[in-house]
Image 1: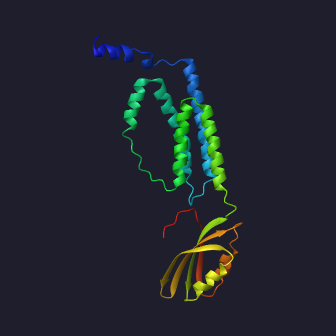
Image 2: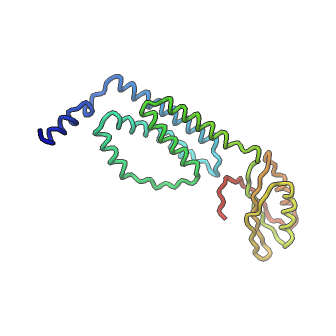
Image 3: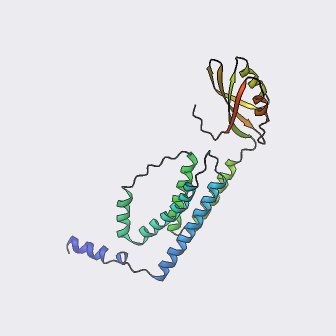
Length: 227
């Protein structure tokens, strides 16, 4: 028997190459895709609920749902047909993703969606559900920062040499750290990192009322600082 005959008999004439789909296979595909859609919507809700970045992207959140379903589809195709699996590996090997991930946690959600799609595509529902429970508990625990308060960045533009010291005195009851101070003749700028409990920002009004203070900007601080 030649190599050509062996490949034809072992692969091309095997059940893996048969394109006929049984009723049980159709039911499995429908269930897996439905579960993948449900898990993707769960990841979408968790991402939306616990998002702590500056600008929420609804398009990215919707991508998580589609990524879960599409990854499940790829896993189903690979697991049912060896020929498609070889072609899929070759096709996916040339794909390059150039979209920059601005928030570090976005990468975790993306990987969660991909692994959930793979797991559900392999019909390992219990593993996907247990992993989702662990992820939700993890995100919930570390999203609660009530003991330490909320973090903010305050940018103050003022004039005079002693105004900066007056600003710091008004922050005596607030945990703060001076991140930068720029002196431009009479026009000065100070950036201060703050931590406040119960979102109490009354100190900003007091600082703004100072005579030589031009403006005060308070931004929620998500952990990334570019000075």
